Amino acid sequence: MTATAELRVGLCGLGTVGQSLVELLAVNAAAIERQAGRPIRLVQVASRTPKPGVDLQGATFSTDTQQLIGSSEVDVVVELIGGEGLALDLSRATLACGKSLVTGNKALLALHGEELFALARQNKAGIGFEAAVAGGIPLINALVSGLGGNQIGWVAGIINGTCNYILTAMTEDGAAFDAVLATAQELGYAEADPTFDVGGIDAAHKIAIIARLVFGVPINFADVPVAGIEMVSAEDIEYARQLGYRIKHLGVAAGERDAVGNLIAVDVRAHAALVPQDRLLAGVGGVTNAAMVQDNAVGLSVYSGPGAGGRPTAAAVVADLIRVAQGTLPTVPAAIPSEVTGQSVALKALEDTEAAFYMRIPVLDKPGVLAEISHLLSEQGISIESLIQREQAVRDAQVPIVVLTQAVAQSALNRALATIAASPDVVGDIVHLRVESLL
Ligand SMILES: NC(=O)c1ccc[n+]([C@@H]2O[C@H](COP(=O)([O-])OP(=O)(O)OC[C@H]3O[C@@H](n4cnc5c(N)ncnc54)[C@H](OP(=O)(O)O)[C@@H]3O)[C@@H](O)[C@H]2O)c1
Image 1: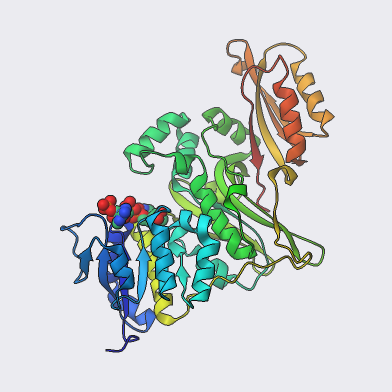
Image 2: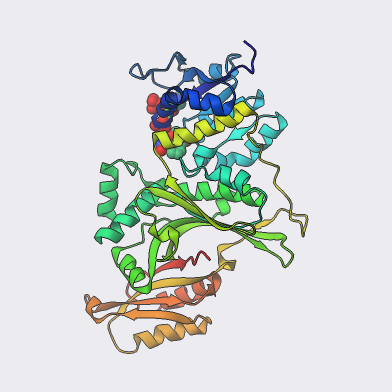
């Protein structure tokens, strides 16, 4: 049998996604072969713990991942271990010996993507990472292939199912963050240590990968502004509703272009935001993921579906394996320098970006406070779009003032926040969230 007769797969990691991959390669073998043009066969599995209950469909099992990578029986390596330690070593070793790598590991690519993409190019190997972003939604393929020739303006996505589950439950039940997080953990929608998810890091990894792909610039992950959903209260969700918005956790990647369309800066961030209720993303609930893309040919397009889970994520791995079998897995091109300066395109500092903002300011319930807040905002050139001040919200002689500003530079907002927080009439932490109009 020649090397091209079948694609021989080595799998590292036999956890949730790894086990689903084994199953899916068997269950869908006929469809996969038809699409790939040749059989795709799992030949070796290497993982920490043997799983005697899992039918490996004839593949051999060992705990030696290094051996698997070097094996002459393995054409392509699937890394489903996760993390940055061993997974990085295995990925380097796979690419260095000229084999293509398929991975679901977003942390690996957000932090070491540039090195791995270069190694892949040098060794004429591919890296498939459809599974790393938005699970079962074929978003990477849509961006690099379907929309690949278009000038992307921005991508905004609900790309962390845990955050979306929690915010949806808080919206529907009016429950507090901690209570919903506990339920999410019981149901398996949140990890025992939820920091990566609710702290926004997982979404930031994914949006950094997206930004690298669509704008072609290297993204230094340490420079990506990240915030989670811990500060969002049921009260904020209710005020947002009254103002015509839903609160969603988003990854946002936006390109800034000059008058003739040259890319001059890239704005990448992950945080909770107010989304107008009539936008499609506002209606995406539960653990579902969705991404909205704006480009200069199609306009707005939306991609939605399961962003995690064994089978959906394994399906994304299979899609990459099919591309490897066909020889159509695209290489990630080297990062481009700016068309304007010849230098690498800058990642925009959050302070230099502009948005409308929601603010909830807890103040003493006494005359003149609203006028004082308005004055402090106007000193920084910030105009108020809408305002809520509720008598019934009085609690221990405190009352929240809720402000929706017009578009303003984040730097001006930060100055206003500092002066407002310093007022003796402000009696607690100020919550502020961006508004993403998604237009
Ligand atoms: N689960 C999802 O819904 C999902 C969605 C999108 C992307 N992903 C990504 O897909 C990857 C795999 O996720 P998963 O949920 O399948 O993880 P998982 O269930 O934790 O599985 C990881 C597997 O790797 C094995 N492993 C861990 N350390 C190892 C080591 N030092 N040597 C050898 N094997 C080792 C584990 O062995 P043991 O069996 O001994 O624990 C386990 O079999 C991650 O990068 C994750 O971010 C997952």
